[in-house]
Image (cartoon, rainbow, N blue to C red; front, side, top):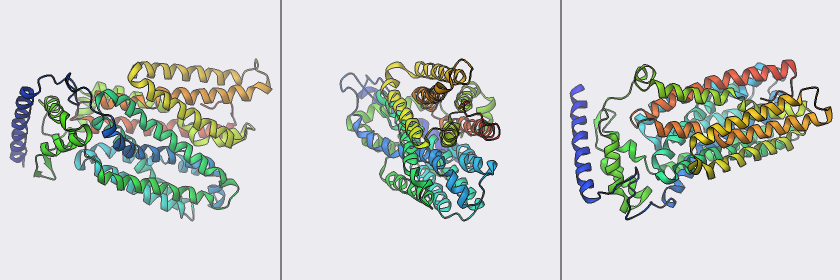
Length: 459
């Protein structure tokens, strides 16, 4: 078996040299990963746009399932007879076991079967889990359904981010990367809007879960007609122990994504970027203790800080918080959704103009200011009539600041920083830290709210 790997790798190396020599002679002015030369300019963004939208369905589903419990939790707990069980309510809302499982294995899955099949595998547990949740007769049925959904939620963000990075033209990669955050915010808003009748209409919460099966089915269907990542095709010489060159398939994918005039330059640059890589798959120990450990640590820390900010607590439990504060949950949740969307749209416009670092620093700074406003609302210096306005305003500013940078930037930044050989597995390790810290921050906050009644400490 070792000999077969070595032979395949030798073929890969020879093919790489051939591409570089041939394409450099014919197209000597290659300047970017997508083969942009001075003579022919940038490839059209329109060719890859539809495929970005398809991949963003995974992020839409993530956002939808993030917020679907918000308006429906009270009705679910009453119908399934666990009202007042804070542990059960928190577990259903966060479904973190499945999320951790999906994110941990996402890199292994995509390296093994490619993006198209991985997206379809992401959609499958979401369809199954949504159906199980919609037909649940007791708490355990709901928990099992949420476990399946959580697995898809763990897979989705990793796949969407990596796919967008690898199929987007370089000059719009930041803009397209923001599409995943916009899709998440639209999914969140959709779940809040659809969930409004849940408190007045008996059994409406079951409709909310059935609805989510539709975009999941569309994701699985449309991925059948979407191109595979050229990067994955090019580097995959051994699949299921069968030697299979994918260079021709990578060319076909580039033609579909960029257009014929850009294929040769794109393949030349891709050959150069892959030159010097190894045929062997990356091991977990190499990510944690090898020469990539620093960037993996930085990525994990970014995701941990993202979750420790408490943002998911706002998305999970804002209805309960607003109700306790005497504010209409429907109006407040609409404001939360709008703030999240506006911030995501601002990130789309600014990502490639200001850069990732500026947005990230500005985002966390804005979140600090927002939390300062909320802390001030609980002080004796603020009158009781203004306390609610300052607290809710601070929370909306917090959501807005988060969605501008802390939400979309970490995943996009890391997918660009990691070398292609380790990208998928390294992202899965970093996102696993996302789910672990999400549990710690969200569960602690939920217990604080319900057991101590601190409605002013929203984040």
